[in-house]
Image (cartoon, rainbow, N blue to C red; front, side, top):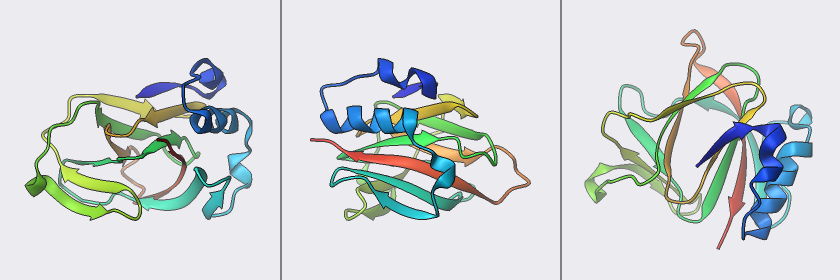
Length: 154
């Protein structure tokens, strides 16, 4: 997991060329100009801008990806509270929902201990296998706009 200011994204070069390209996009792209939906950059990188509602109410849960990195970007409506586990422990019976096509498994978790707050000018990057869960901090809002760069790495 990486949590930092967007202006520092260039410090995080990796062995994955597609992730390095996504970090360049993070620094230079005008995400405000995106319409809702999916913008395909290439076969491995897409930007998702969507309306987000917390998926499972009153359950501690998180999402895990097998092959994709998620880069979450503050989209301007509300700070987001992320809980995360870098080495999550879960069993098959903990699965709430799974989509192989979208490379995501939602699992029940124990009460989380690790939190970050995603606010203006920051990003949160989660590698494959790292459990994460975005929560809307402003409880007056039921829905916010989210921007996520999804990067398939191998």
